[in-house]
Amino acid sequence: MTQIFAYVPFKNGVAGDVAFEFPGAAKKIDAGASVTAVVSGSGADLEKVANELTKVYAEVIKIDNTALAYPNAEIVRKALTNIIPADAIVLVPHDTFGMDLAPGLSIKLDSAYVADVVDFEGMDGTTLKLIRQELGGAVSTHVTCNAAAGAVITIRPGAFAPVDGGASGAVVDKSGDAGDLSAKRTFLEVVEAEVGDVDITKSDVLVSIGRGIEDEDNIEVAQELADAMGAVVSCSRPIVDAKWLEKSRQVGTSGQTVKPKVYMAMGISGSFQHMGGIKGNPFIVAVNKNPKAPIFQVADVGIVEDILDFMPELQEAIEEL
Ligand SMILES: Cc1cc2nc3c(=O)[nH]c(=O)nc-3n(C[C@H](O)[C@H](O)[C@H](O)COP(=O)(O)OP(=O)(O)OC[C@H]3O[C@@H](n4cnc5c(N)ncnc54)[C@H](O)[C@@H]3O)c2cc1C
Image (cartoon, rainbow, N blue to C red):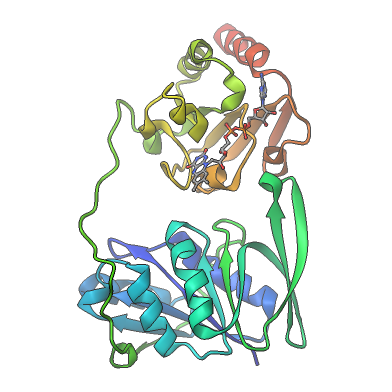
């Protein structure tokens, strides 16, 4: 039977959303596999997360050590190398921390490494079949990986449906097996993200603009539509990089995580870094000139149109209601 371990990161005593998506991913690898969650940290927050995870995992390994209080990938890698069997399949989130942790972990475990997986097509003997996306989501690639000596796989957050309950597992304390946790890399401080004039994380309706807005002066068009809708303007990263809007308005893995009810994606292609910041399954309306834009794969309503024509027309229609 395939042994699968899921490394679950957490913040302020709350497990990352991907913790509830790993069981679905594991089932697609091997429906009969045993799946064990692994959490590392220190003190009450770790305890809380480990207990929470027993609702979805039959076994939760906790590694408690003050050296793990801040998730330093170098130290976590050392602990995992001493605890996870070398021939196991290890799932790690494909986020900034996971990308830091996973490649080196696969080297230490002497196992295969596959990054940014969005789906599985099962195991054939020791051959694992996986699906990745390339060229900004425009192409799906079906790849195989020899998992005879194990594999470390980063999973794209949001790619698998979350589970809610289904287990009443037990916490196993393996803190004593973590070994030497000294490191060359030192944690200094957490720098909180700047707070802007609006909080996009609190808005139910977002009019989100991407590079398709074309010019800084056109942001006014989006702002007027947002005002008519009682919405807030958010954006993709290129808009922030161009210094057209503040960083606090950026949606995505290196920006804010938002949970609106309606997400209007205006001239946004739908990169996974952008979509990774959208949670809570909102109703997505995408407007894009390119009918092949990846955003249309996830949109509830897709409109092939120039946003500079579409936005004023929609604003006018709303104002006439
Ligand atoms: C480590 C890392 C972290 C990142 N973090 C983030 C993040 O947090 N958030 C984020 O957004 N990105 C992030 N990115 C960047 C990300 O990879 C994409 O480059 C970015 O999301 C693309 O933004 P976009 O969709 O606005 O632009 P593009 O990909 O250039 O898409 C623009 C879209 O607009 C359409 N278009 C053009 N003109 C019009 C028009 N007039 N009317 C209608 N449609 C039009 C085009 O067809 C195209 O689909 C990150 C990248 C890296 C490497």
